[in-house]
Amino acid sequence: MFGGFADTGFDAAAAGARLTFFEAWYATLAYALQIYFDFSGYSDMAAGLARMMNVRFPMNFDSPYKARSIADFWRRWHISLSTFIRDYLYIPMGGNRISAARQATNLVLIMTLVGLWHGAGWNFVLWGLYHGVLLGVNHQWRGAGRAVPVWAAWPLTFLVVMLGFVVFRAKDLTVLGNLFQSMAGMSVGDA
Image 1 (cartoon, rainbow, N blue to C red):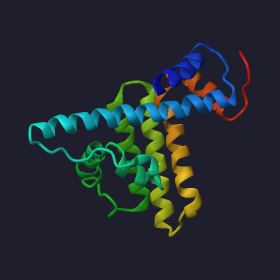
Image 2 (cartoon, rainbow, N blue to C red):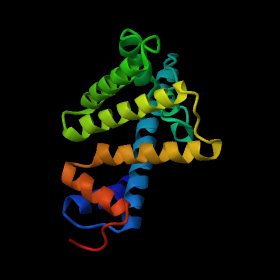
Image 3 (cartoon, rainbow, N blue to C red):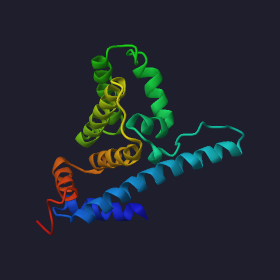
């Protein structure tokens, strides 16, 4: 259901149509819901089938859209991948025992590789880079003793995750630019 709404908006943007502010945000929200329900649903089905054979899989999603920071999001989203990344890439590269600058650099590098793991397109590389920068900023911010106000933490996290999904879903940089323009209210009607 959500996939159809997302496809309509993203396909229109790919065809050169200029979406309204509401159409662009509607397509973005629909895609965020589609990707979560599809991926979480597939994981739940695999876990259910495994339990029928007396095999227990660990939980793979823990309400990621309730996250209050981008680090919290990645602890809740695709837990098996996040745990693998933490255990086999992040910690061996020094984890949080190294300088803040090196930690941020490692996060950007690791998440860019995660983007490439999702696919060979530039959108996946940019999506990984985007999340790496967000994680680096998050760690720097928290390391400096700062905190996002409680009332803003959840909406801000959900917003940056949704913006990342636009990067992930857009088929090229032109579509990405058109969508972001529309989401900013700078594009109304057809081109």
